[in-house]
Length: 257
Image (cartoon, rainbow, N blue to C red; front, side, top):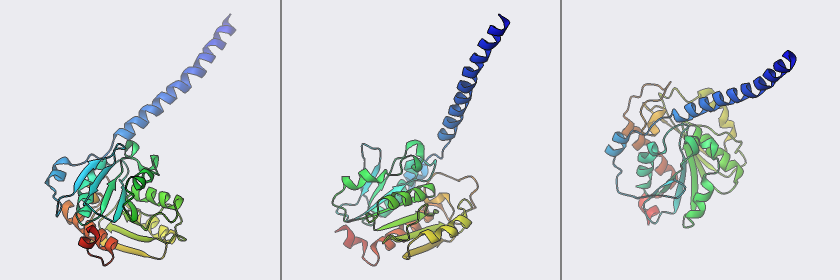
C-alpha cells in the first residue's frame, strides 16, 4: 500500500510541476509584454504638422496618414514594446510633405510577431507607384526581413536607430540610416558590422543631439543618452531628412500632385 501511495504521489508531481512551471512562464511573459512604452498623449496633442493630412484607421489597426494624390508610400514598423501611436507625429510630418504613410499595428507591440504586416498594406493602395518600408529600432530590423523575403517589391528602406537583419547586398535598393549622436541604446558595434549586409546606395544621417527614443513620442527610454535637442526638434529633423531623401531632388509639392 505504501509503495502504491508513493507511486501515485510521484505521478501527481509529474503532472503538477510542469503545469506550475508553465503557469509561471506564462505569467512572466504577460508581465513582460504588458510592460511597454506608452505614447505621450499630451506631447502628441501639442505637436502640429506643417499642413493637415487625412487620417484613418484600417481594419487591421494600421494608421494611415494620407496627403492626397501621393505616388510614394512609406510603411513603418514601430520600435519594440512601443505603443503604435507614439510615432503618429513623425508619420504626420512626413505625410504633410506628400508621402502616404502607414503606421503598422503590431501584436503586443512587437514587430517580430508579424514580420509581414506590410503585405496587406500594399494591396490596399494600388495607386502608390513606389513603396518604401522602414522602422525604428527592432521595427527597422524586422522591416529588413520583409524586404529580404519580397525582393524587388520595395524601392528602399529607412532605418531609424536600427540595422539590417538580412543580407540585402544583392537588392537594388536605396537605404537611409538615421540615428542620434546621443543614442546609447543602439548597439554601435552591431550597427557597424551590419553595414556589410546593405547594398551600395546607403545614406547615413546623424542627428546631432538626438537620442534613441525621440523618433517617437513616448518619453525617455531605459539606457538611453541625454538628448541635447527637444523631442519635437528631432522629429522635424528626421521627417525632413526622410522626405528629402524620398523625393531625391523632386519637390514634395510635385510628389503630391
